[in-house]
Image (cartoon, rainbow, N blue to C red; front, side):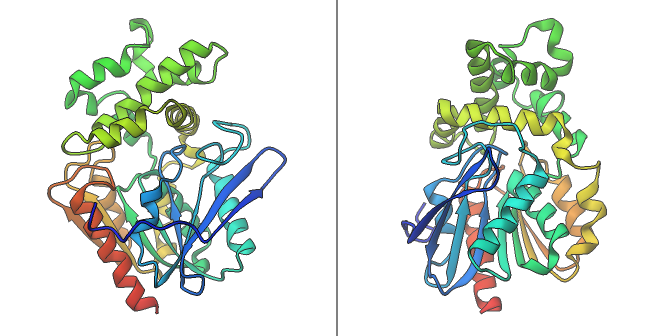
Length: 316
């Protein structure tokens, strides 16, 4: 991925206890005196990866990354208690206050775009700009598309492996069937469900299959937190009222943004990005013609770098 900025290591890392249950892992990279930028990972439950540091010019940005509740290096792993969108928004504000940041650029993809939008609509005065990828508004029809009826028609071979842990009589409500196994007491059934759930996402994330992406999603630790936390959130409609993010998009009116979305994104179809852009006049929608969902795809990578470079100039 030569189009990204060079690989860097954090200049500081922290562990922040945000309540009696959860402790977050947080790292800072780049320039301590630079433009503050917050990276919000996907999932929910996926955690941060080293290449996520590389979407920002390290000489210009103070890059802040943290693993959300229950995933990555945050503890306890795959924990569902006190884990909702509103807890995560409170965590973002706690991180901002602890680091002494007044306002920052917020960057998020997939679920990270959901969380970035929810945060920006709740705290618009704290957001300098938004860079969003693979828009996911967490509406029931979006969840239905990927986990029940829609994407299965494009990927019938992958779908067969996805539904394999679920008996035929339970397949009319796959989210409920997976949720019951992922939150149940049978360790073997839980891990089988987690692996099937996570690999389904990894296989469908790119326009052309990417072994590195699939391998990441196949990792048992990643699969468990991703599947458990996603099923927990999606069974509860992400703890958001239906269409909340679009209905409150006027709160983004003073925030500039760039939306990057793959034309052939079959996890989060382009419709949601299109609808959001129509309600947010200060957003530039970049449709990538040869890409699916993943931030690892070349066209999406380039567009995200162009967006952070643009704001490096504007915000400086």
